[in-house]
Image (cartoon, rainbow, N blue to C red):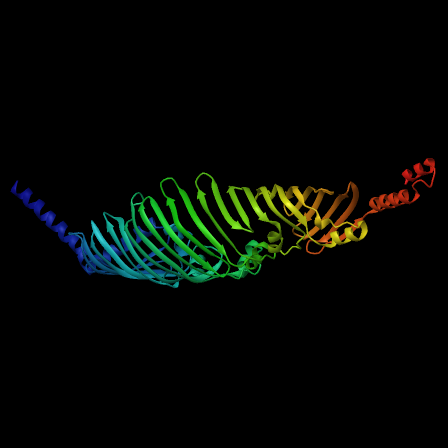
Length: 493
């Protein structure tokens, strides 16, 4: 029995010596090296080569494809304690996609120190991600990331977009200060403060993708986010050469995947939006509202402009806008259209941005026609000054089909009645083709308006009115001078 016990003790000692020899001697490590390399190649989807392998003290050089990982330092397997330095040089992240399973590309270098035990250790390092100067510290407990502190300086936005396989739509540099005390997605804690400096839109890419020409925009973004539980609250400002936007209390709820964005947008010079609208405009505008994304996308907008108010709601693709007390002359001035009508207007617009179809119902009150080509011709041909007339209610009903608008018009004053059916306005061609029936003291005059919206050709057909005027003059002059039978003949003309 003693011999058996002695044999077991000797066997255990020999086993321990063997394990020690394998783990803690160079010759033993050389025996393990090909076995570990073979095992890694069987388990990993990319080719791996162990250029150097030593456990205690640790000295490992691992080649993964064209990338190199070097690890040095002290390792105590029995106490599960380590103090290691690492240096990782990745030639191209795309070559390691089977390993990290992310669509990434481009080079990445990082180095630092890992210190602690398997129960808790700290990773502290630096990186050149997206050509930046980045420092980071990660605390890991029970092999789960617990906290993160990072500082990113001058990350190149063009390189970041390249890394994630996106077109380079903008240039600029990102600075970020990240302090996350908890990385638990159900109980996030911390803050992220970021800036984008020297931002500039890539005009060529925007034109290529969206057909928008001359999108010359320089910008800066300042952002601060507070992470608390499953809620992220953000304050952001966007300052550019075309507009400023302030987002004071943006809330993203991770639990129910909802987003709320209150905003204030100020556009000091509407002429700078020409690249986007392809329409000359002037003046300024401030818009306030809210963006909400849950099951549906809902965007509200409000503006006090043009002497009145504009309120709009976009739900998914359906836009509903209401205009109240809008000064028509201010509107036409803003759009560089000739001032032909002075009135206060209200309107109701329903439009689907996907189909680009909709309706517009508008009413204008106490309107006056301003001097223009039509009023001049009417004055000359009918001897009537239509600019003195007051139109209590002017009704307009329009059908919108993409850039074409067909409208019916009806307006009436004490002495006149003006109407039109299917008047065409083509916004893309800036073309108008309309026929107006102008009844002056119940005598019709037909007015054709055709050509450029800015300066259309106006022609007046006053045959019926002139005929009636001639008839009246003849009747007045021939009264009591011709027999009744002859007077009846005048009615044939």
